[in-house]
Amino acid sequence: MLRQDAPMKMVVMVSGGGTNLQAIIDSIKNGQITNAEIAGVISNNKNAYALKRAEENGIPGRCVSPKDYASRKEFNEKLLETVEAFSPDLVVLAGFLVVIPPAMIERYRNRMINIHPSLIPSFCGKGYYGLKVHEAALARGVKVVGATVHFVDEGTDTGPIILQKAVEVQQGDTPEILQRRVMEQAEWKILPRAIDLIANGKVQVVENRTIIEEEDAL
Ligand code: GRF
Image (cartoon, rainbow, N blue to C red; front, side, top):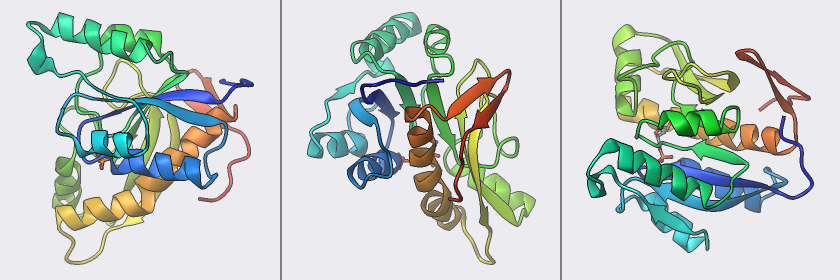
């Protein structure tokens, strides 16, 4: 459990638009997240709009792209080094599409979280990312979807679940429409909420589960 006097320092890792990053920034500004600050934003893609959001908000941004390294090993080392340079208490994967190096998982066990756009264990694991999750949900014809915030372990979407929120599927949904609704109604709410809970020492991991203190309705 993280409990500290200074604000919790976060590194947010992104690959694309950064709407989840924006939700975190906004929640810090409006007081929905307390006791936390974003020390830096790391992207694997130099054109990610998320980096622009960081810049506009005076947050240091870094790009570490696999394309710039001769081997995966070198990239992994550089990625971990870039994270470590910010000395974060919490690493937040907010739409980060690169496989996390095992050394980083070990280093940040129960201190690294991810947002996944489904109700785990549905539509998760290898190959389920981005629009593919929503395409699969519509193809299966489920009536309820949602999002999950979880700690990151060695598996794909297998770590301890922190928060989940359900969202209804509507007639005529396309993957894009559903993706947007899941973001608006679930992701942008539960990711900041999970960060606030962690920053205030309210999340405990016991084996592969979490115990949340004082969870209010979302
Ligand atoms: C979100 O749907 C998130 O759940 C997924 O990637 C997307 C990132 O969107 N892992 P954004 O970059 O935060 O806008």
